[in-house]
Image (cartoon, rainbow, N blue to C red):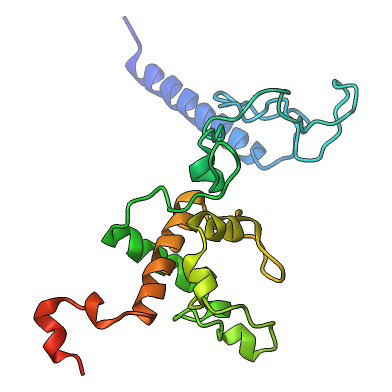
Length: 209
């Protein structure tokens, strides 16, 4: 038969000892250790990799940043359509008209991009008297001359892409689709500044003085 008082005493002694051991272990957690911490779920935190511009002992030229394999093209950069991406036909001639339809949505987008990238020099109305000209920049030609009204859309696209004379190219800032929309808006801007009575809808012509 179990001696109940003695059993209770033994249980209390064991519980006290367990508390002392746990307390001692808790105090030891703040001590420095040369052993690495246990990392149960690494999640690829530690993996061999090269950082930008780091040298490589694997490649003969010691460059870790590799060039694309010769003859390959990154996805989305094939750009076989010369008319859309270069503004030229298969013979290298500048296209007369833009390959995008002139819609209200396209014109609004073109106006937004024009106001951001073009108006500082060309002005909001395209007369070449933008704010940069008042700061000493060489004045660009007005868009409302006969020469630029009759010039090919492909030429305007090419200038936006590659620049001309004092104007830098905007290929890195403006994607091809937006360049064409700027061209469309520019055509609408030219017409707005050289409109005649025949360009005004019949129902409102009488209100124009």
